[in-house]
Image (cartoon, rainbow, N blue to C red; front, side, top):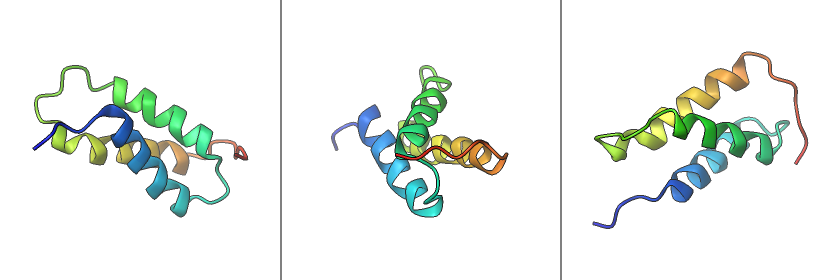
Length: 70
């Protein structure tokens, strides 16, 4: 199995969260997803990165961030 790339993780997270948060710009979601991904330096189990990144960005979006249009 080929390793999951960071770009693929971010793309998947952006796709899911853009659907759940249609008023939030995809650029903002992607920026936060990249920041969340970088917080997991040297992960030992990359399979869980999409879930961890998505959860972190979801928490941020629910916290009342200003809405940005894509």
